[in-house]
Every structure is written in structure tokens, then in C-alpha cells.
Image 1 (tube, rainbow, N blue to C red):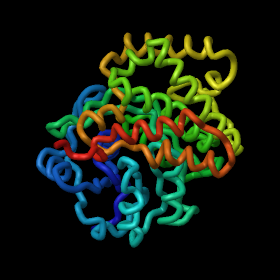
Image 2 (image 1 turned 90 degrees about the horizontal axis):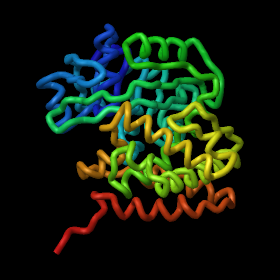
Image 3 (image 1 turned 60 degrees about the horizontal axis):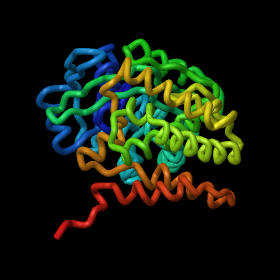
Image 4 (image 1 turned 180 degrees about the vertical axis):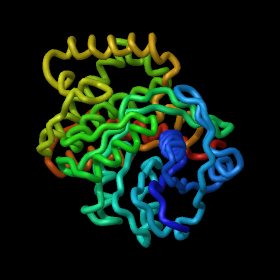
Length: 326
């Protein structure tokens, strides 16, 4: 296989959105996929609906050993099994590698597989849902963020951000990408936990005072861990994390409820990807995210009782971990 511009590891919702848009813009893209999803793309291409309506044929690589090189590797799989998936690509040559997965542990795995010099920070504040028939419903196009780690910008980050943005998926370069990653993670811990425990659409659990309070407390606990690691959080996230982490709890709860009202008006059908996973019987991103935070806190001697409790609770909800019934 010849040189490609973008190799997308993971053809789920966001990976498909990125791959389809980049291919439509004229970049050489391959999707690393397997099983039923690989067959869907081979048969019908990447089918995008919602904010964009188009179908794009994109080559599929089922065997990672067939990929020899690419300018950019984008990891868009769910976090379980990431180490094994990256190990299968260690032979390949990449100019830059980045992950839009949830949880800050992703960058450590990329560095172990390809060397820290090739690893860029990245996050996706973008939403989509992979439907049963293989179509992808593109529902939120806020921002993909790319930057050098732990901070800074470069010609390669400017080029990648520009290419993704020009392709139709909003993307910016950030000189403080590690801060942005952790700010997203702080927000994600609260949103993910409440989404899978309530099973409610996003606007509904954001609007409820009790679930909003749980979100605020989880955000504050995770933000405290970030600060202990020397990382400042920011309001540049799906939730205003820095604001939620300071000030009164009552004001923070009101801010979450106000966001719920906006979701109800603008995205009433939005559901967290974690809720989509649990509804479809896919493994939840628990140990690599909540578990990662608990491990970091333990190593630093910091108490994170909510994160620890919900780590175990959410793990018990994981459909792939349930014991078979009688």
C-alpha cells in the first residue's frame, strides 16, 4: 500500500466523520477497520447524515500489517484494547500521531508505541452516532483541537488543523493542548457517569438539579487532580470547567442547568457516546478513563471518593462484563 495522508484507526462515529470529510476534500485517506464495520464501508462507503449529507468511498485496511506508512495517524477507537491495536502498527512509519479518544492516558500509549516526538495532543468536542445500518449521524460540529505536547504549536499542527478545518470538521490549533485535554476530561467524567447511570438524553440530565450537582462535584474532583499534576483547567470545553471548579456549588449547578436548556432547544436528541455504547452492548470506557484518574490520584495521595465510587459502579454497568443470566 502506498503512502497516505491520513490513516484513521477506528471507523466508529467520529473516525468516520473525519475520514469522510478529509477524503471528500481530496486527501488520501484509509480507514483501519474490521468485521461488520469494514464490510459496511467496503459495500456502501462512509455515509454521513445530519449536519452534512454525503457518501464517500474510502479504502479499508483490515490487516494493519498492510499499512506501511502515513503522514498522520488518527486514533479514533474506543479506549479498551488501544495498546494492542497500536502494537499492530508499530512497524509503520508516521510523521505524526494523535488520538481523539477520551482520557489523558491515550498520549502515554501513543508515546510507548511510536516515540514521544511523533505524538501530538488532540481532543474532539464533536458528536456523532453510528447507526445500525452503517450510516453516521453527525450532530455537533464544535471543535477538534490539535497542538504540541505539553504546550506549543508547530508547522505540522498548523497544517493538520488547517486541513481538518478546511475539510468541514471544525478544527483549531491550541498552544495549550494539554490543558484543553484535561479540561475536556474533567467535563467528560461528570457527563459520562451521569449519562450511563440515568440513561437519559443529554438535555434532560443536565436540566435536573440533582444530576447537575453530581456532575459539578465530579468535575471539581477531577479538576483538583489536574491541578495536583500541575495542569490548569480552562473554560474552553464542553463545560466551563474552570468556572465550575471555583465559586459556589449553587452557581455551578445553575450553570449546568442553563446548559441543559440550551441542549433542549438546540440538540434535543443528543446522547453521550457512552450511553450509545451501553445501549448497543459495546464495552464502556471505564478503566482507561475513570480508572486512570483514580490511579493517578492514588499515586499522588489525593482522595477522590466520587471518582473511585463511580469507577466501580460504571464498571458494573458495562454490558460486556455482566455475567450470563441463569
